[in-house]
Image 1 (cartoon, helix red, strand yellow):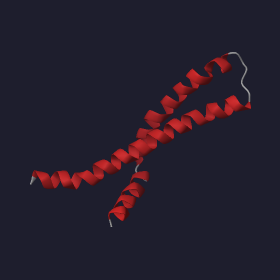
Image 2 (cartoon, helix red, strand yellow):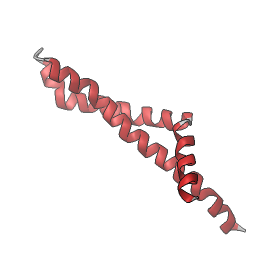
Image 3 (cartoon, rainbow, N blue to C red):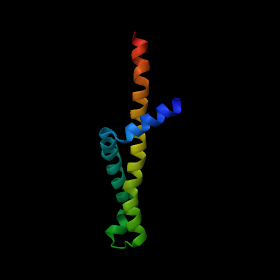
Image 4 (spheres, rainbow, N blue to C red):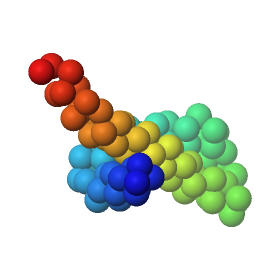
Length: 90
């Protein structure tokens, strides 16, 4: 029963606009900063090849994915703990 509730919470989190927005606001800038740090010199010297292009595209997606899972987990945690906190107040 618990796992079904948890699965439903995760399913709901993945459809929540706030989770996607938070992940984009955190993950994409961090991914772009990683690109500048890790591949910036290659691009600056015009030495980019197919591997560098792939890394440049993948970095923001990886950072976004980590931020997305983190935002969804935080959303699920807040949602699942909210009823317990309310019942403790009573």
